[in-house]
Image (cartoon, rainbow, N blue to C red; front, side, top):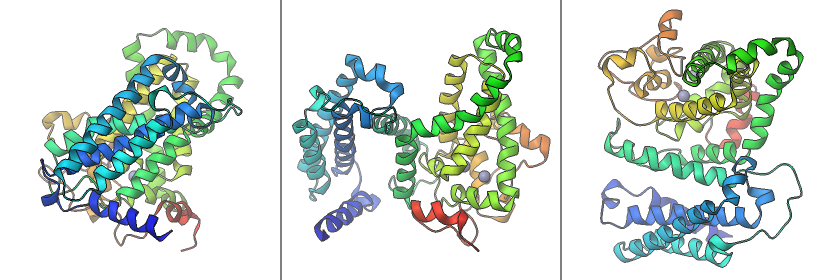
Amino acid sequence: MTWVRKSRAALRRELQSHPKLTTFGSGWISGVVGLLLGIGSLGLVLVLRFPGVFGTEELKVFREAGSFRGVVFGLMVIAYLSSLLSLVLRDKKLLGGFGLALTLLASIFGGSRATAVMPDLTPVSFGLDFFVLRMIFTGLLFIPLESWFPKKADQPLFRTEWREDLFYFLVSSMLVQIITWLSFGPARALFDVTSGWAAFRAWVSGLPFALQVVAIMFLTDLVQYWLHRAFHRVPILWRFHAVHHSAKAMDWMAGARMHFLEILALRGTTVLPMIMLGFAQEAVNTYVFIVYLWATFAHSNIGWGFGWLDRFFVTPKFHHWHHGIEKEAIDVNFAIHFPWLDRLFGTHHMPKDRWPEGYGISGHPVPNGYWKQWCYPFKRK
Ligand SMILES: [Zn+2]
Ligand SMILES: [Zn+2]
């Protein structure tokens, strides 16, 4: 299968082209849009064909409403047009060619009219639709912001180690059902054995919605702060958390890099106050959405200065210092929402006019690649 390897390598080279070859009008942007949406369309058509295997349970209502097919149709049209535009504009036809071929394949499989070919046999499924929609939504939000207001202006979209981080995105989306089930498990069990708290929980869930969301943010950040600090200070935990810190570049995808077992530990612990205290489901859902956007923002390559707001809310600069490679950045800035928790507990670090020089762990002890990083915490030194 050398031709597969060769064309993959050629495609990678095209994606990682020198910035001079990716300017507006070069056919690179349309080629990338065509390729990514071609892959996305094909993924969503697969979901329509095999909803029991690739469809996220939570998105079932959306999938069965007409709008999902509308989204698939829209993506395919954009993928076709972008790929064609790239074929016209660009000397190298690789991006446009692949984009067109993948979108054609999606059409052959039934396109937006594809129907299920298999009954839903198992209660478990992969979140392929969640992955595609999450990538498109987050990418649409952050790629323009990062290119208009970059911290590192010379950092390309397909920067160093982008494939690793994309794979982390893929795994955490595909396994979303299993991750959610496992991480809510301890909280559910504790909830059931504390039925005596029912009156208190009813009072909490009756509080104004905004107050509940702010209370969840505060409580989870407090729990997250100490857990995060433990992940830095306890040697065995650090071996897991080192994977997150091994990222050598910061952007909207970098935050996805996290060891699978750390994801379970972190979510399993931070959902405890939300579930145990009985917050309303809508408040919990809203918080999950906020923390996802906020954590993505904190890692992003956005160079905004927020002035006095920096003192109250976590910004990219604050979390970038947490990832800094220099000595002064070791074990600082653990909060994910409120930096004053770090002030309170003596771990705050925010030099006025400086950002970190580089990112990662000194000496880069963590190997590259998802599976090597999976095994890294279990290896002897
Ligand atoms: Zn950390
Ligand atoms: Zn981080």
